[in-house]
Amino acid sequence: AAASLVAAVAPFKTPLLANYATIFSRQMSKLKTHTGAAKRWKRVASGLFKRKPAGKQHLNSKMRSSRRRELGKTVLSNHVQTRALNRLLPY
Image: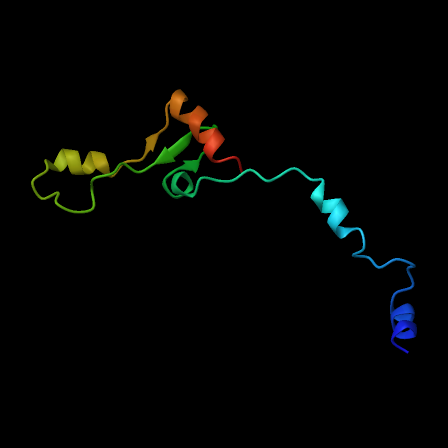
């Protein structure tokens, strides 16, 4: 009774998931994103990366106001950092 019910629902001779393991076991493994770099850097349209400088969260009352203002601006990556970040952030 159960076999006829399965045959009525699925008209295929083999179940759809029969070759699932063989199909997906041949694929290459995924590249992993470095999550620490992903949290700190964002890719911009030119291909470079931008980040916020560190050191502005606390203990900055002794800093010059120009230094605090400078730490608030975004910074772009140089070509050495860009090459390394392209490997760390593949997607």
